[in-house]
Image (cartoon, rainbow, N blue to C red; front, side):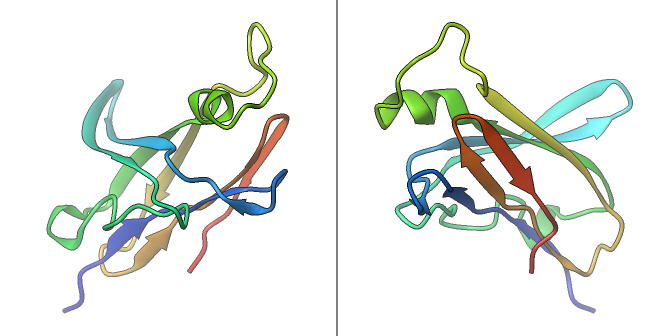
Length: 119
């Protein structure tokens, strides 16, 4: 039986390139509680160096990825706002198939974001 895993990818749509050095935190949602499972930083390709939720920890449930967009935008020199329009970007999603690969990318700019279930 195959075991699923979770990956992510961040693309800076304003600059047309991967979003490197962006911190991402993964939580499992258990009722009203968030349990932190991982924290990683994107590499030069805008991806994490390994699955953010590997096969040996993968399970059906509700999860949340927090993308530190504001810190990334500050680091690349995007003119700051007080407060920044997008700072921490949460994406809450469900995993219903314990044998599937779930890919949750973030398309990001200073004033917009989008996600989808990728492959």
